[in-house]
Length: 379
Ligand code: GDP
Ligand code: MN
Image 1: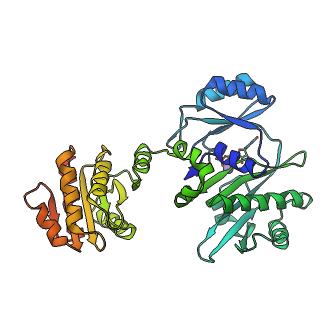
Image 2: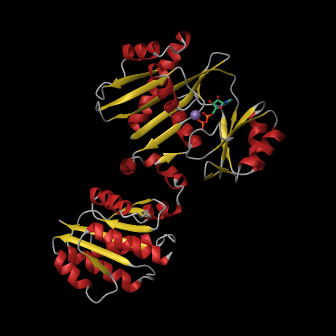
């Protein structure tokens, strides 16, 4: 789950991280009122899950509440890098002197949480990594101890961050690590971490991704869950408890097991098609789950054919076949459904499909070719 910047800053602030004063707004009236409340110069920032808003016109300064209102009028409802701006964050503008980069994430190679920092903040870290790889400093953290003081001193020193502010920066690093660990985050990022003209160190931007699999124990973050969904279909799938990713193509895909599903997506691509979605019904999927899944895939109006790829292990072919038959009997199915089955009770499953409109397929590549061909005919 991704949090919007304003939400991420609320969480950061609750852990004692310094963030600018500000509030989210949905209308120009609200923007003006918040700007008046803050007083002086404000910055207005589009709240979308995409980086580089600054360059794309999603971060603007205003010197008066009236100017803020005008920017709010233009920004709310605009499309920024393909994302609709529904909310903006109105914040006190900072007299920025220096911009740093700071983050924590999981490094799978070294099997550590790592801190990353750079004195070249404010720009995309990927750009810095490409042009000045030596300016990026990494700090592997032992999960048993957290970042130790000497490590943090070394980290901040190697990155050449402001030595006169090293105490404040060190505190921020510790708190950001605490956020990362306590919230089951997969990424916490501050870019830029700003040093102001009057010597304060403040998180001017915030990025925060939480592991979806930890949501059951991150009750405090649940309030952000619904608001964070950008994609209507994914939001619906989430409510239905399905593992679904919307991919934008026209071949619907249902499989059992993440590996098989990803493989099926590859096979659809190889057959010249574009998958509409990823949907993993998991192991041991029963008829009602299959029904729910099929119904979900059919909600996507772009879907022109569906490929169901089942490898029976714990999942039984006959169970799945019953689910498909049940679903197709009660749902309004306008598209061809190709079913490939192998493994436990696959033969029994395919036999059950005899005489139905479902199209059996012996192998996945052949099934994918059929799906692509039928989708093209329907287009
Ligand atoms: P991003 O482009 O989506 O990462 O949005 P940021 O919040 O990082 O803003 C982009 C840039 O706007 C920053 O790197 C700053 O250089 C610039 N900026 C200028 N004044 C301000 C200010 O008062 N606050 C913030 N947050 N950014 C400012
Ligand atoms: Mn940024």
